Each structure stands twice: as C-alpha cells, then as structure tokens.
Image (cartoon, rainbow, N blue to C red; front, side, top):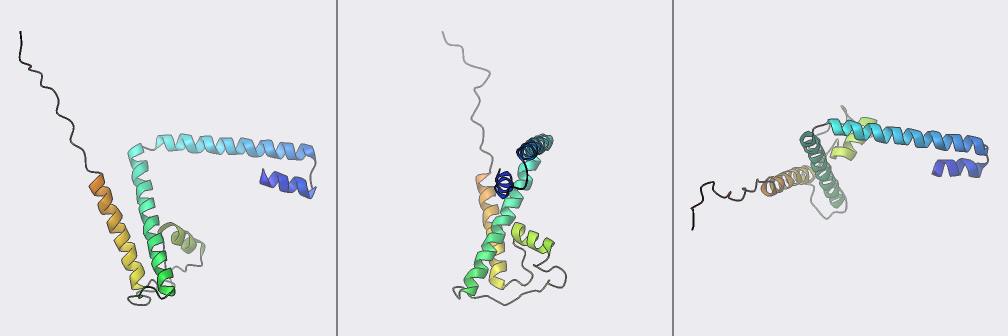
Length: 151
C-alpha cells in the first residue's frame, strides 16, 4: 500500500495501472504466504523447532557479544585482550555475507576477549537453562488393572 500510495502521489500512473499493480501484488503476496505455509507444514515439527531454537540461541549470544563490545567502547568493561583473532582477510564485516552473519550470529572479525566470554557465557547459560527446564516430567501413576473387589 505504501508503494501504491507513493506512485499515486507522484502522479506517474493512472488508476487502472494502480489497480492492476495492487491486485498483482496482493496475488503474489497470497501465493508466497501459501507456499511458505505449505512448505513449513512439510518440515517435521520437532526438526523445525530444533533449528529455530538454535537460531534464537545464536542470535541471543551475538547480541550479548555486541553489548559487551559497546560496553568496552564506553569504558565500562575491560576488553580482556584486544582483537583475539583477525579473520578480516577471510571474511570482512563489510561484505554481504559478513553483515548477514553479524546480524544472525554476531560475527565480529576482530573480537575482544570480553566479547568471546559473553558469547560463550550466553550460549552456555541458555543451553543449561533449556536443558534444566526441558527435562521430561514423569507421568502420573496409572491406576492398576487389578483392583481389589469390595462388597
């Protein structure tokens, strides 16, 4: 709708073209939504939630490492070693893949020690809590098949 409004406000196209473009966009959106939904139904639920859980775990660890980096820049935390390693020759943070990995998992080509510590502590903390809360609850005792006969 925003694009259609922008085109209409600019006065570039007529009403017929706007209507056809809006209908085509709506049809494409519905088709993509249906394809995504039907595709996700084919993935086993257990595997889907396992993968998304790991993705959220890595995202949280990356955010914690970024927060540590900001706190080091503000001189609120010690760096615990500057640039522990340097992978900028292999993958820079300015490349498309580097930006994507930075967003998804918190990739930094030259991390400080505190960033690595925060990343690993977050991974470990969330994993331990998930294992602790995800323990199977024992089922309630079942009534026995042999009941005493009472008269």
